View 1: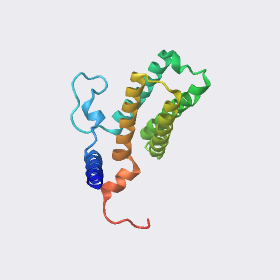
View 2 (view 1 turned 60 degrees about the vertical axis):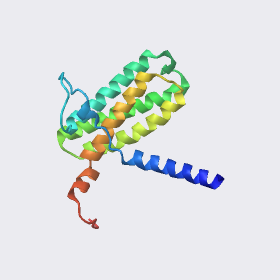
View 3 (view 1 turned 30 degrees about the vertical axis):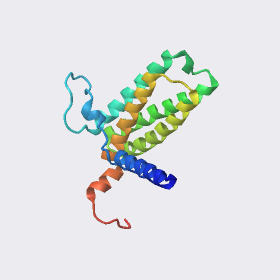
View 4 (view 1 turned 45 degrees about the horizontal axis):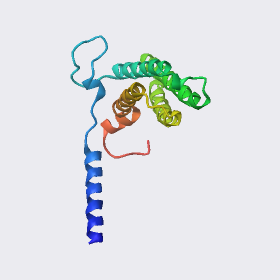
Length: 168
């Protein structure tokens, strides 16, 4: 009887994991209001919009975090969080400049911004803060960066090309 119960529990958790993994991502840029418009956007967002959305999310996160006295930048436990935000903002600027110049800085800026965003998540946990607005802005940032990676990176270009991988 115990084995049957354990088996049912395992299959239940497995099915939950499969359903969770198979669920499509909600496109942030396609469901939020674009800059300067009052209506909802329809269709796929372009790279310029996604970079702009990510920069707005970083700015909102900084504004919310500055308003929270528990996230004071002078406290030692909060310094890694603030350094990570600075790195994300710097890499987004690099990506924007690379996009305008049409060079590889765009791609490298997105890769580095994603890495800095992952570090930001770790540093956020270390602060111990539960500031809801900073968390929401972090989620918006993560969605915009994820869409940039999946739709406008070298990886996405290779995926669109399809076919077998070659040595080149």
